[in-house]
Amino acid sequence: MSRAEIEQRDRTHPLAEDEAREVLALADEAEAADGSPPLSEQFRLSVESRDPDVTHLLAYAAGRALAGYAQVRAGSGDEPPSAELVVAPQLRRQGAGSGLLAALPEDARVWSHATGPAAAAAEAFARSGELEPVRSLHVMGRSLVDGPAWPEAVVPDGYRVRHFEPGDEDEWVAVNAAAFASHPEQGSLTRRDLEQRMAQPWWDPEGLILVVDPDGDRPDDRTGDRIAAFHWTKVDPPGGEVGEVYVVGVSPDRQGQGLGKAVTILGLDHLRARGQRDVVLYVDEENVAAVHTYASLGFTDREVHRQYARPPAT
Image (cartoon, rainbow, N blue to C red; front, side, top):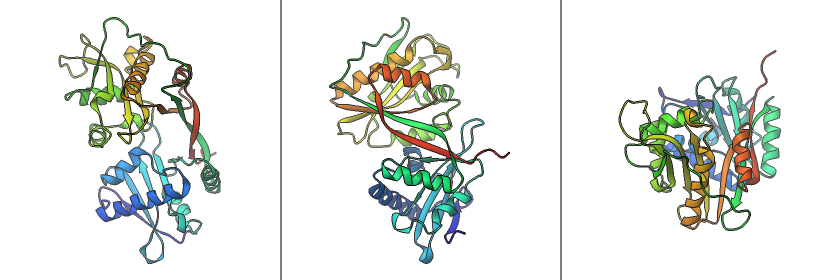
């Protein structure tokens, strides 16, 4: 039985500012100890903003020491909720992790972003909680200065390429939601989530490349460009040498025209022109078409992150 006291924070009892600071400090300690961040970007942003629309779970040891933290987010559409969990390195194996796991919804899927030896420990913890691996996220990468050359981008006639501009926010959110309708995390991004990212030090509107149809019908019945595809590149830290294929999306009604590969190449060209020397990306193992596209552009596996869930009741 857990010896940790679990407290919940949500819209009726919001996460306090000092609690958010404690959680972020705990996550930083765990990253230093394990060599990989325990919280992905969206989950960490939700702590920083004290997002009331997610569930925050705090595990306290004796003396009100913060021993662990978990967050639960609703999935998009009919997808089950996603969760991430971290325990303070010096307070592990004392019941905080199992207490947080027990407090999660029965159908929650729990991410582990651990790599190296920490990944084996995370898998052992998951199995001790009767969780099984259900999803894999591949981290792929390639050099932008060496290795196989990628082809020139071929953008079909009738489309034009430009960067993100003020006023594109709602259109981008709508296209992103449609493109990732079956993706539990990416498909649920809201305008607020977009604005959180636009407030980050790494945000660069020129890094969000749009392929637009100037004559397309927009869902909001306004005139203007219809976003057909996009490639959001990211460089974090801003002065670093490693870029990221942050998000590549194609509107469902524009698929099958080669826009995904074209906009991916446009992003690689952009990152290389900026002086980045390496690039990474995250892609779901089940997205076979995307994995094939990235492999054809010279990307290879570097890490694999796992998601775990309780087996369905029999």
